[in-house]
Length: 388
Ligand code: PLP
Image (tube, rainbow, N blue to C red):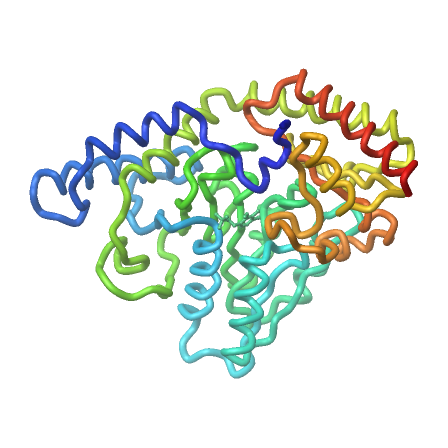
């Protein structure tokens, strides 16, 4: 089968698996232990922490270790950021606290935001999206009030790949004294991400989206940002995220990011060329097709295409049988039959929402795979039309 669902997870690269195997056998102590085995694991872990921070544009001189918190992945980092920044806000809290998210956040931001609003009697505000999939930046200033305790806007959409103007949003939030978190889960390891230049207070990334291991993510924090923990227990990671740290997982994430960095320019150019070729072939073979978010800045490897006239779920199932793995709807939650909230927030017509399928490429995707995938997709489209 041809795997075009890298936004769901990008399979681990052999170099990463090798580095993790070696680290698992070499670092056998608990990084919190006082003995030599513990100290060795601690050193490796701290080195991975620094390297990852450095590659993401964190100024590491004077960096506190707790400015990069290892977590179990994007979902945990997002929850920690929202809860942690909201709770650490001004004390005493405002009488009518607000929190703000964009209309296209991943469920790991949208659900905790709803939960937080319900349990802390806060007002949840939503920043709108335009038809290209971009946040309505002009609506941000009027939404921010002194009572806005935290804002969260993703850096790039998992569904459309559209890249948001986060540095501009951060500038506006800073002027209003609102901490801004960005979910950079789909951007890290695909486009250059510079934490300092973005100017955000907190940033989420997860290794399995860029060919690293499953089960490890990070939350980056600007120097001096206050965060309340969501878990309680030990004193690891300044008690902000207690629990035994894993040097092999941290090294796996570091290695995947290093591999990306080494070939970043090549990988980006290759993926963009493959994606463009793929889209042109589909548009030529299915003239009613529309590339969603195609007019906005996009990630190089994400292609959300409305195959107008067909049904997205029927398409995903038929494509699976034809040996092409892709996704539709609220993509990560595969099996979900709900129409995509992202596409609905863009105000797209029903004909586009109900026929949209997401194809996402990876570092190992080849031109031959892309040609063959496009051929199979057009076959499936024609068969479905005849059957329908
Ligand atoms: N945020 C975005 C934008 C995602 O696409 C995902 C993917 O699942 C997540 C967060 C959650 O990350 P994780 O699977 O590491 O929990």
